[in-house]
Each structure stands twice: as structure tokens, then as C-alpha cells.
Image 1 (tube, rainbow, N blue to C red):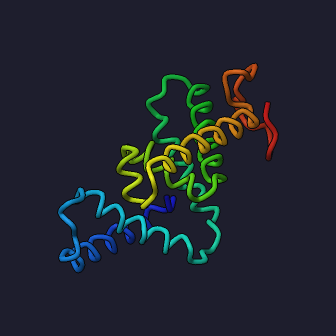
Image 2: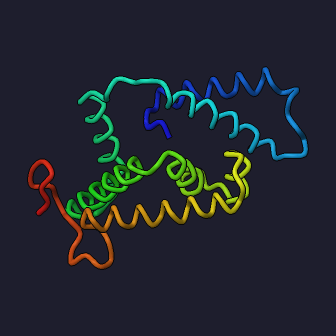
Length: 167
């Protein structure tokens, strides 16, 4: 959710310190993992509320290099380029979601939580979690389609020609 490895590591450490110091408040009627994720979620929300300086170009280069390393196993350069562009477009679309939608999307599809676990971690009714996921998927589909990615598009954009231009 923070999209910064160092910050994520700091938040993980902070979470485990809080878990240790608040172990006596754990209710055994709930899943232990959900309790930990609730603490992690609260720490993350607190972190995201703090003002942060913009990412530097060095951070962008490191992130891009990491994505290229993941694509190294792809057989063709064209497929690797398409996959990188798709990942970037999807990341940008997720970043544009409302924070509550982004949270449920990340917990569901990156952390692979069940709907019930998401509801418990975020302290939301199950119906609200399902509604947020539905709305988030709809917004993501519209954003991706508008960016040229989707089943009804003639061809997915392959490579950026210039800033903001697609071939």
C-alpha cells in the first residue's frame, strides 16, 4: 500500500513492536492474523496521512529496473515491453482509486485475503467490502479501457512514443 520498500519494512517492524506490546489485548475469539493485519493497516493509514516528499527520479529508475528484472524471463522483448506497460498502467489505475477502494483491492488481490478477513481488518460490514471491490473493479476496468487496455480495444498500446503519447 505504501509502494516503498523501506517504508514497508519500517511499518512491518512498527507493527510487530505494537503486536508484542499489546499482546494482552488480543481477543482469542478472532483470528490472530486478522488482528495483526488490523494493527498493520492502522499503522499504514497513519503513515499515508503524513506528508511525504515526491519520489525522485532515482527511485523511479530503481522501480523500473526492478520491473525489468521481473520481465527478464519473458521470451520476447515485445512481450516484456507490453507486460511492463500493462503493469505500469495498472499501478497508475490503482493509485487513482479512492483510498478505501485501493485498500480492499490490495488486501484482496495482493494479500489474497478473503472478504471476511478484509471486513474484519478494515472493520467494515461484509456487504461494504463486496460493494467497494465491485466499484473498484468497475473503475479499474474503465480506467484501463480509457488507457487503451481491454478486450474491446483494437490493440493494446505497445510502447510509449513520447511523454503521454501511445503508438
